[in-house]
Length: 421
Image 1 (cartoon, helix red, strand yellow):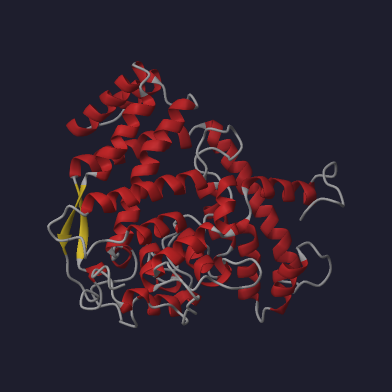
Image 2 (spheres, helix red, strand yellow):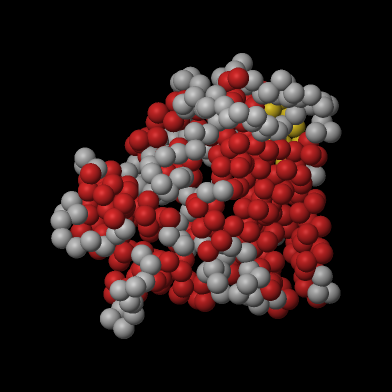
């Protein structure tokens, strides 16, 4: 990495040594990116819920299109920050690393969006819980290649960039989300360079706020994409219109910044300028951040922890208004809540039948899973690992595959012996 002084051998170290291919022309972060793009886990995002169930209409976003948009925004933020006096042409935040992080950030999300995540968290509580970010880490380090239980051997910098949360489940056992699986302590320790967290970084919200600069860029790119595009999709679907938005605003206590932003959105709808105006807002968010020096216990080891991303408070306030509008006018409507209820019911029943067959009964009886998956589960030494492998299989499902599997198991009029399972 001599061409970029921002990074050192510490940043590109991997969990196991990487074999250098003859004639390799890519740097370590480009290899990370390419391995993500060419994985089945990444392809499955094309049929996983972002706002609306995938397949509802062709032009609504899925997890895949969202991830691509986040990656574009992340690379653009890197380009914008390159103008900072703190960086130069030979010392800069690597856009390939940030792109990899953005493309990977939602790999661990199960079918049906956050509803799926909540359900799997509940049913997996006796076995160590389920969390989307932890599942992303599990995919990258253990399961991304479907031919076996193999991860992609990512760089330390990518692991640190993806890890939004650095608290183990056992440290906050009552948390509903924002934790890592206890079994991932080894990976967390490697990511931190085998440095213990200082006492002031207590488990939970405080420790989870400790992030590398690339993780901060990814998080702001993600916030930018979904806060704006969830509103855009809500407008296109008819959930957000001039009347509903004005009525919503009249029932809120909005400060001057928020009120002005709502007026801007109303004018956008009134003039039918949704795409150009909201796309312009994305550019505004890209230019809303600036680098500031930072210092913490990892700063001596890597420049990735020597900077923080400071976001213009006015622009951040606008993104928070967008999130609240999308929540109240889209996600909490009966239309989506009924679909969420159905999705939760489906995942609950799928897990229950597999729990009875494979977790508690050690796979004795019916053969409900593909042979390779079943073999791995039945060879697992304890219930906790069997449950994790069952959860992997469910979490990997696309929306349509979950619906289809449910119908095969529980709908007497659906299914054929020739169906793919």
